[in-house]
Image 1: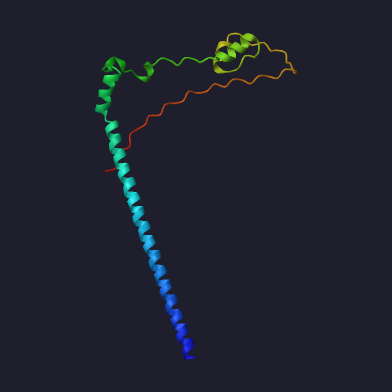
Image 2: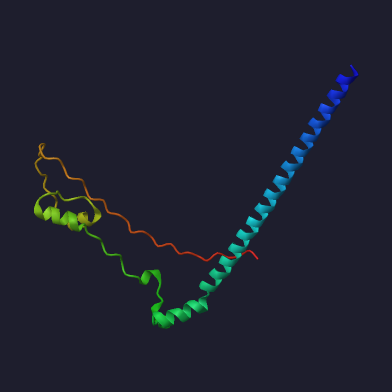
Length: 158
């Protein structure tokens, strides 16, 4: 009976030693991993700081002014060039050039777009006989031009 207890004690001692070493090596692995992540974080922080410094150099108004004078032949803005919103000319109505050519060829009916409505408002349109055999062509859709977006340089919070 005494020998069985000795064997069990030795097995328990070896098992606890294996468990302690496994915890030790897992801890060392996690510490090395954390140190590696800290180095990567510092590297990324340094890269961001370098990019911010580079951006501040590239977006420097004095540098841009020198380059504009050198390559674009810029002129000084005159006071007469500044106007109010009311002083701007009205936007010209855009016509549907493709639709107008199709109408000239007799392949399309007049559309009810604002440009077509203003062009045909003086004369009322006579009703056309319906032709069930021919399908109607799709009405052209006027697309709005994209609005330019102004980009601002990133500012550092330091």
